[in-house]
Image (cartoon, rainbow, N blue to C red; front, side, top):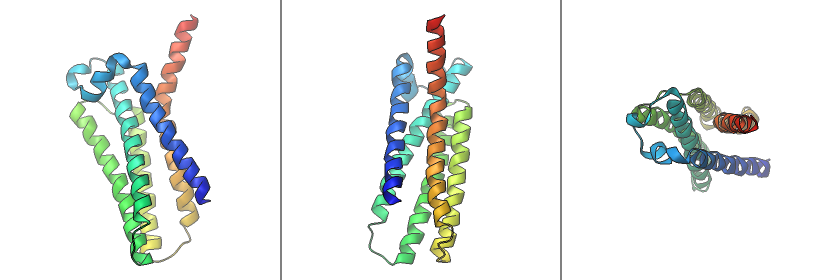
Length: 183
């Protein structure tokens, strides 16, 4: 099961990188504005949506890499089993909440509105934080493993859902470009 989860994790990470690269390549004329633009570069609703989706995709990718690598390092720490569980699940909870805060503040700094993509990313991150806090209580405080299978499946499903959410905007743009070329 761990090998399967690791394979899915690396597949999701790779696809998240492709989504961010695709957004940068497809919208190459906006590349500078995507990274360094402010309110002045947001002239239309489409600009707001593009910037919000890019911020969401980039933040999902970065935090997935951070939390996955952090998790790998935490499990190698020498401490008692119960303390390690508490530290692990609380750290993962903190990563999810840091993602929410970062996504919110990047939108505030950029001055763009939240796209549907960004909203769903926030909802999924909050669901993941709730799942991690539940697991912290069950395994870290009560030493009860009854929810562990649901936790493992839930984390994988939430990561897949995040990937799907950040992929929808680029896929819609590809479809609209293909339809325009056919006409």
